[in-house]
Image (cartoon, rainbow, N blue to C red):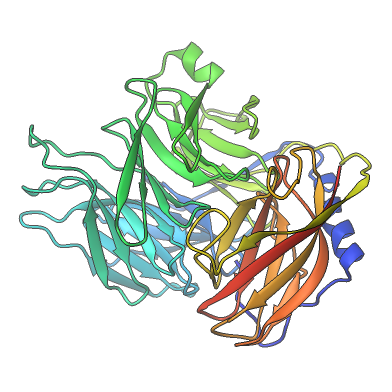
Length: 469
């Protein structure tokens, strides 16, 4: 993600901005291509994410790696031997944060300086798994296994200063065996959502540590990683061979993956992310395949040119998908997505002015909390204020108020698309400011808002006055 600059972003004129964003759908790559870059002495590569410096960062067995969009790889040794690095995420402080399954949370600057924060246990430290930036400006992580007596299964929170708090989300395990928590992601409702692999559940935890759990219909589905979708829902991978979708109200829908079911493999998809085309993309570890599922549930699979055990997957700043591939040696894969058809012509329909988002309100899908600097929040607009599901764009008034830092800017764009360069509105610390815009929506009527202001939060208000379809 981009850091807030000392000067404002250029605000494009309203209709020029709309044309730029509409053109994004037509500017997709012409063909699906996979380019692979060997990791020197690479072994055990796992998660991958886009960093604040415009590069991709990934977790390796004893290293943290950086790869530029052109494929230049740099590796940084983890201070702890046999760290078993696993998850990695961009933090709100401009650094990368990663988990070491040796019982440590790590922080690495874009220049490669690593700091470690150990987790404490009675006999052995807990084993952290996935990690994600939360809506509260902290990092949140799952504990894959807790072998101490007492509470088993926790969600952890670490501040950017390294202060750790843990929240039990599972009662005492009668058998004494570990309970596995896997993926975690920030949801559009201001909560964190996580997967309970061993208990076949999806969990939600507030930033205050209050957890709620929802069972998955398919027995033994073993949910793994999870991501916030472009449609205002959460999407997760199931090791049984399915992709799951859960609404913020807890309603679960599952979509079987044809090749995984046909192969009979017991390990289905591993990584999952939202692609620059507004679809959900996932990696299939044992099939050597990358899959795509639309928000409506239409699935397509793309086998890699040669067999690879594909692990992590992330949308890159260059409009491609990036993969970690376990081989000999491990590889980083750059996957260009198939072309998308251009959007059809649209007609404009007016609406009575209606407030659809106001983060000053209590926490919820269209209310608080305020936007966090370097954070992205998605809002599902279809179905709100008279906006139909067929709407392709909306005419809006954007307002910011009470920014705690600055100068800053917001960029509004179709959920799941690549973050564009122009800002939608600029502001200074403490300023209240408004701007009109025409904003394209994702395929299911969702909008993402990116905030950059050099730290802190701002409140965001969105009024709609019409739509295109």
